[in-house]
Image (tube, rainbow, N blue to C red; front, top):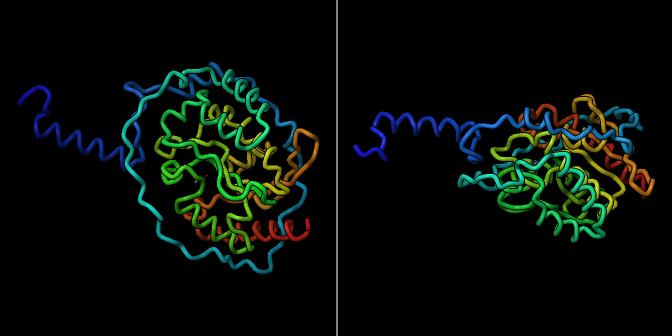
Length: 300
Ligand code: URA
């Protein structure tokens, strides 16, 4: 047996080891040795920004819902199976200090005057390590002139492959939820807090969110919607400043103050991916979407 070919037993062990990782969702090799990213980030963490523009008390309490039966019931098969990705390695930007990258992102985002400019800026931005493991930038889908803007957490495998947000099973459910209140992607603008897929669908780290936050904030300013909908805890916490878990935070409108001082409303609700795992909670999301519909109808 040549040294480059493991013995049959070792080979079987290696294959089952790799299978274990693939099943666990590890589909991108980032480096040869493990890193404690949380330890590194704590050492270099930027001073936490207060959320001056958000974090205010809820503007309204959850609506009572005489009609709780959720219309989002039918589950659809995945549009596309998750693709297998070749391993990639990090570029140098992965070791950039998160505080510096966030400052750089904020300064550059502020200069962008259109959504097209902001997208072009993101295509060239190297301050977030996620861009080196992602296949595509996932900037937005839908109508940037729409009155309502939905913000999710981060792209998954389908979105990464296609380059648009909410394309997989969560996206199909989101489409059905929107359809239940008369919306489709021509009447809504859709994006995420983080525009690159975290490898293996892990959650984005607080540092990655801090780096990407100036971009989503500028995207909101430039799209200038009347209403924001935060899908899930990361979007809700990032955009409203609340520290509450999503089951407590949902069903409320929070004030979101734009840089020019105008206030828009941000509704917190459950993420479609959570609803796919916990279908019984769709009734709560249906309450939230009826609040959204009432706000859209009342704001005319
Ligand atoms: N989940 C998200 O938060 N965003 C997407 O685009 C897809 C799934």
